[in-house]
Length: 387
Image (cartoon, rainbow, N blue to C red; front, side, top):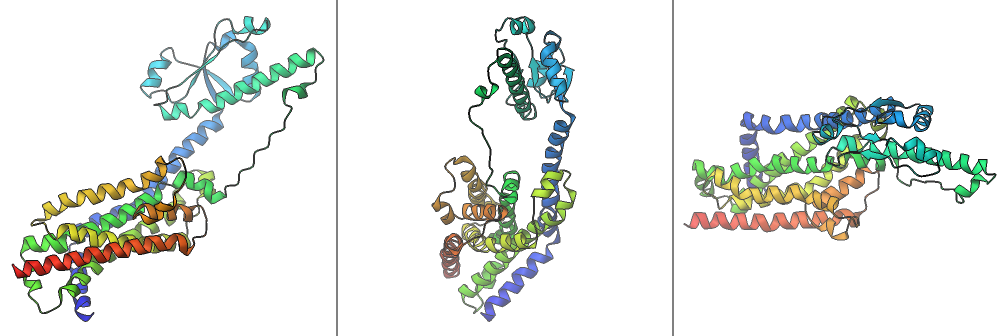
């Protein structure tokens, strides 16, 4: 243990001495929270601002004075659409859907026929597509009003239109509703662990071999297991440090939220920071050892970087599994490194209490992966000395 601690202190000192690389890791980690939440709150604030303006863009509204009267009574303002609105929607230069009213709207309405109106949008233009719902609700309200008036004029009870009263009840907590907007945060924390450990893992193995300092280190009487354990401890600690800074950056970033609704829902305090950091320990242990195992066989630092691309790609894609699975979280998620941490951090964001049955699989897999990878690194070092 004493020899492992000596190697640990040496590796940690080497990593901290490389200030340029250290700044490349720490600055993005500190800016991650403010940049992400600022961008997210800016998007939501712009959508809320557009909803508060209560404006509707329409073409041909002069042919439907009855509909225009209803829309204005709902405190909406009708704006004329540009002549080339279709081209602007395709080019995302127009960020609002357009209501298109036919010339025979009023004539068909008076004769009891159903005129057809169009809501023109572009699904590739997300901002415009998001505004179609409010127009649909307006038109549904107009339909209900016209139906009610028609029945009342004929002496028919208007209750026939709605024989069933519908009430919505949302079971999601405030934090759970906010997690729908902030579910990208765990992925950034996971990537912070990976990139925090990546450079140190490659430098302590392939980097030292390229500089010619690995072989003299292995010639020392210290057991190879102690050398590997010391190097692994320093690599995992750096990964955890970057993850902690990334998590902490979201706490002051909440002050930058422009959206009042998001600020009220998004609650990220010391408890969430501690939970996120503890959940990353098995992931940092497993990934650090795996990166070292991949790099120990490389002769140069660049070769080790190329070999680690597979791990970076796999870890970055893990959180996407839960997004692409419509069936909800599966039990096997908790046994997959990266995916388990993403699932548990999302539960923390929702305000759910974690149980040992959820946390234990990630701990077992993470440290089992670390044990296997470190044994491989130690064996590779012994083989290098034998040669």
